[in-house]
Amino acid sequence: MSYAAQPAAQAFFPNNPDPSGQVFIYRFDADGRLAGNDTEAAWVWRSYLGTDIRARMSIERDGDLPQSARESMLASGHNCHLDLDHDWLYGDLPDLRHDYSMEARGLTHFRFALNDMLLVGTSKQPLRSIDHVRHLVERGTRRFRAPCEVVEAIVGHSLDGLSSDLVQIGESLDEIEERIVRDAWHGERQTLNETRRRLVLIHREMVSVAGPFRRLEHQHHLDLPERVADMAARLSNRTLALNQDGEQLQAQARLLQDELMAKLTAQTNQLLYLLSLLTAVLLPMTVLSGLFGMNVGGMPFGDSPAGFWIVSTFAALIVGGVLLLLRRIGGSGM
Image 1 (tube, helix red, strand yellow):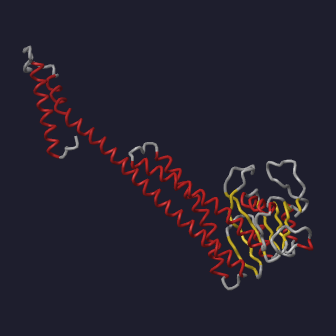
Image 2 (cartoon, one colour; image 1 turned 120 degrees about the vertical axis):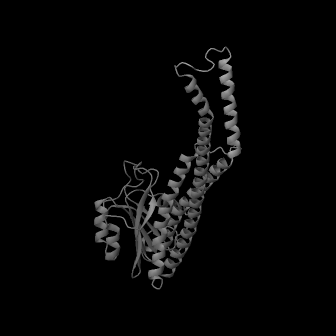
Image 3 (cartoon, rainbow, N blue to C red; image 1 turned 45 degrees about the vertical axis):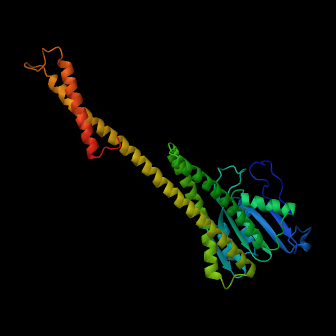
């Protein structure tokens, strides 16, 4: 194993690139352990910083890589894919930026090309999955006997993060559902909307990972080396399972949102019913007050000391009649 020169800005990248744009290089022996020198190395893992012009020049001049793999690694845009060129597997897969990246956490891309003897990778920002695999390599806690095992570990760690996110979202949805059932759902609309937004983002990442592996199996199932075929099958099955879990959570979130909207609609209807009831009850009293409030001569009970109580009693009888009528029509929930 050898490293590029250590940087002054440790917070951005744990290893700054060397004059060739290379960030690190590992050499593995036949048992998958770190080799002491080049003669013991069975295969090599090289990683470049994608934003370094020196790295681009090194990849362009790398005669070990086929032309199609070099074009894929140096492409300006991102297009998730996996392709096979003779015995070389190359592609572009999404991953999560590392916590110590200077940019906000989110998705970026890992580009690579591999055969039985070499793995060349590049990324524009530090990646959590690559950093995790590097720790496994340096501590010797896992052996990597072939380059495809490293790629499987990188993608697998990314899927572990997605699986953990799905578990947390599932627990959050269960809590929201419990509060909705207890009718303590006030204020849950924003939480549920944010949960659905997270599910949409995770679903997009899972689809972008699962699609290339499925297409690789369908298009090159007869040409894939055995190890690569096994890796693609395992990762494809795992992404399919995670995708199904994500779809179930999305269905649960939609059902909870529908139930929440039904409760909001019921509450609104109840308020509208109460307003309609008050309008119906107060309408006769409004009419009476309007009639007796006219400043004209000949008003009944104008000179009677008990006029106010007579009119009030008459109004109360009318209100009682309206209430009985509403009960008979369908106001039994009053």
